[in-house]
Image (tube, rainbow, N blue to C red; front, side, top):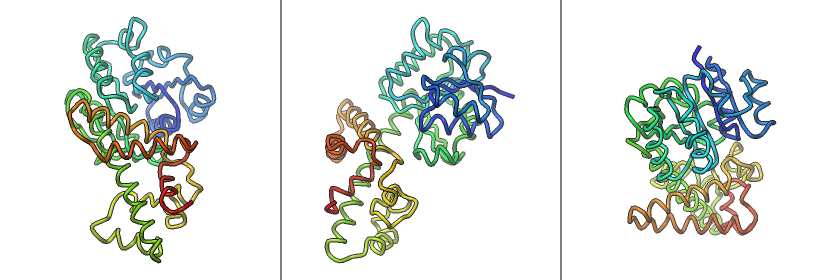
Length: 297
C-alpha cells in the first residue's frame, strides 16, 4: 500500500485525506490543530507530530495550506521538506496561492530533484467531501502522469487537468474563480431585477437556465433563498465557500492580471464588492451572500 503524507487538514484538507483513506491509501497526516488531526486519525490516518514526521517513508506528499507563505515555510529552506525528502518524491500542493510563489516552489523543488506540481482545486467543501473535486495541475508531464492515480481518490478523472508548466494550475484557478465571482454577481443582479418587476425567482432561474444566461450558480448554487434547498442561500448563507476566500482569490487574480497587463475590469469590480462584504463583517458567510446587496435585505 502506498503512503501519502497530508499536510493541512482544514475544511478542504480533512475531507480530502479521508477520501484517500477510503480509496485504500495509507495516510500520515499533520496539522497544527489537534482537533483537525484527531478527526482524520479517527478515520484511520496516522497522526504525526510534525510535517517531517508525516513524510517519513511516504511516496507522495500533499499540502493544503492557507497561503503561499505557509507552503514555502513547510517546503523550502534548510529545514523544509524539499531538503528532507528522497529525490524524485512526488509533492502536490493543492493550496490556492500566488502564481509567483508556485513558480518559486517549482524552482526550489528542482534543486532537490523533487517532482513538484501545483494542483489547486475547485468545487468547495461539498466536492471535497464527496470526492468530486476538479484539479488544475501545473508542472512536468511526467509528474502529472504519476499524480493522476492519487488525485483520482479525491476528484473525478474527467476533472483532472494538466494545465501546463510551472504555476499553470494557479493561473487556471485564478482565472476560474475570477469568472465565478463575476457570474455570481451578475446572477444576483439579474434575479433582483426580475423580482423587482414581479418575477418569481424560481421561475426566472429556470428560464435563464434554459436560455443564454445559463451558468454554474444557476445550475448548482442559486443565490436566492429558497430556490435551491441545498444551496447555502437556503441555509442562511452558511458556507460553502466563504466571502474571505473569494476575496483572497480575487486578490490573487487581479494581482496576476496587473502583472500580465490585462485590464480585468470586472475582476477588479468584483474584488471591490467582496471587500465591501468583508468590511460589513460578512467574511465568514458564503460568497453567494452578495445577493443581499441587490434584493434589499
